[in-house]
Length: 267
Image 1: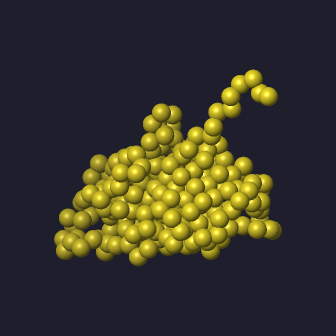
Image 2: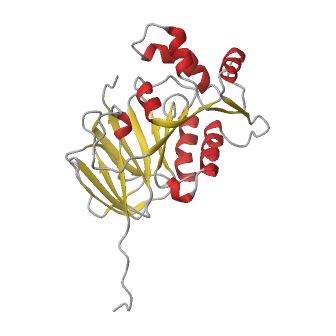
Image 3: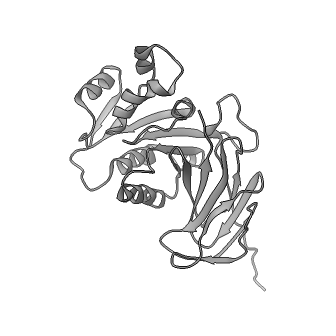
């Protein structure tokens, strides 16, 4: 018999309350601080909602073009210039090969910090943005920070793979990759996971799978097809096209897993 007690695994709590209006936040999860990173893909239809939740907004290079060109179409306002002047990112970071000159001039004149990293061609613009947030956030603050990334899914698959790799490179941070259709987050093997489902904005379709290393044992609750000490790996079984069946999904695994869930038609 072991002479010391074995500490139970800590629980990491997840929810998608950032997809809800700011005035309709549930009480089952602690309030989070959000940072928003905008990549150079079409903005999701719920972008104004994400912007409102975020305390820090960073455009990754050409992501600034998207805010400049597309934000007005996602609001119910009639005054184009008023909308453009309202949605000003705090920082624009990247190698500056995609941002248009007039967009760069406009945001610079509005007070946005322009961080030209054209000397660094070894990392993606998303990596540069997440690195900035990582460096400027203490370990204590990281536990209450969630980084939302738009434009991370869709388009070229090599870009998607690089964006998913960011979840693993910065696994000590909560990062959510978003598109109009779904979200992806990493569930580190160091924790048990309680995922609270916001059924008005997400689900029911979901998936759970390992990337980079197989899982020898994964157990879930709250799904239509739950896993019980299941083995998962590419080339064998992975959990796709599953269905959430409860308000809370729990996951415990011996491997880092990606969790994905469909998003409803948000506006």
